[in-house]
Length: 63
Image (cartoon, rainbow, N blue to C red; front, side, top):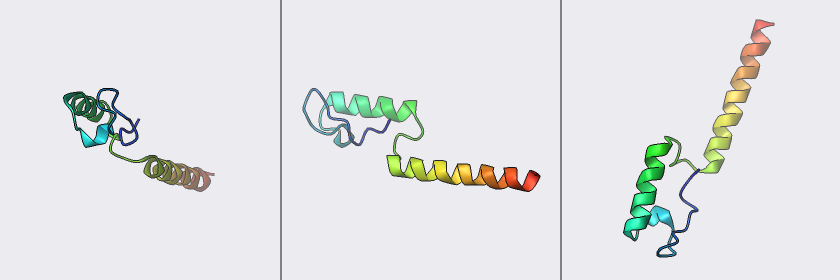
């Protein structure tokens, strides 16, 4: 999950801005949990498409 769209329940600001201690703690926790937390969903989809294309190419060459 990316934190760029999350809204803090404490201050009602985006968590990515880190305006209050709760935002900063949540942002830090999310960054530690996932190495892909800083990537937006479109980048993840593009990486998935490239991976599928590479797998299809390898499967086609082995046949």
